[in-house]
Length: 185
Image (cartoon, rainbow, N blue to C red; front, side, top):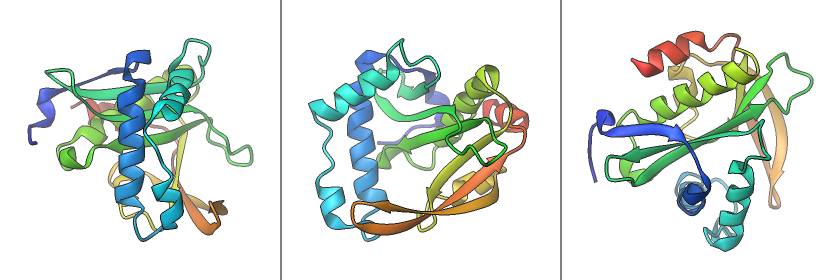
């Protein structure tokens, strides 16, 4: 599947997108983190009804502080998603956080991630503040995307996924206004 980034639209997600988001989430973890995270963690990821319900809850109107956007093709196929909300890092000065950004493997390299990221941080900036942080595994090969988007590595923190010890890297923007303008160009 190929296509230019101009063939896509980015919009706020709704409850009907939850199943597609759950599928992309599970597929992306399995392809991105193979060989990085334990196999049992990746094999237990499901894009079924439980994960779909979780995303419906996140997207729901009672979650006003959590923003979810989807990228879709002209024919309505959801190709990726991103989510953001208040920063969960109380000790760092960033007010908003990008929680997730995933694009289906078949659509990598088409500018979809850039458009999703710009739309999501624009909404976070509008609702919260122009300062944003995103956390990713230090071993994630896609982490350089954040550097290309102008993020600066500002922190590291240990964590666990399943039984595996991990390290996360925080990339931040003191003001995402330039990202928003650049991403929409």
